[in-house]
Length: 245
Image 1: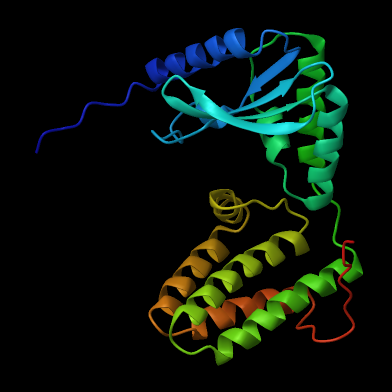
Image 2: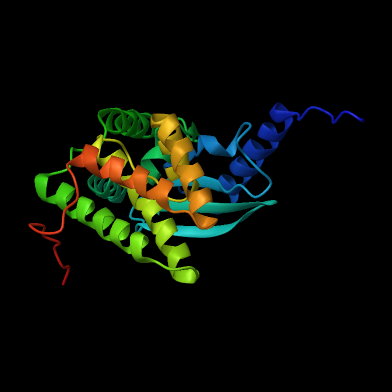
């Protein structure tokens, strides 16, 4: 068996940092603060990983932009400082700290007091964690999982059951995190968050979903009911869902 050469992480990291700095110099010459997500460096980076940035420019309209920086796809959150503050406040309310997670542990490509203050503030917000669910919020999220459990019990073979399985998986994970005052995530970040905060539950959920897709939903139903019971029990009435107009 031929051994594979060890990955030279330092060399690749240097290449990523050089590409990031070139991108800043060529496309963002007026930026007052630029932070590169820490996930762009180290062992978790793959060949398809994005370079994620937070960019502060005076008078910039808050937006996300996608482009390419060398051989890496790039995603940027661009805003002025006030827009950044509004956006991270929104993330705290929604419990989904994407820009906060880029900012707090990220690699500063600008060295100034604004960048330092942003990172310190982001670190403080992440450490404090999200606000506990209100009684009405908890009832709503329990109701959502209750409905999915009922649907999964009745779902026959086919695409419908597959969608309900995945929805039950996601809602179970999110309800556990929210009812335990933890941050949420999307996609792989939801999986990583549950794995970090509740490794045994993460493993059991994954196994239950695998078995459910093979035709036996009993294990997934048991996990979902366990999470529901810990959050206060099934809810079928006395809940309110605001409707945005």
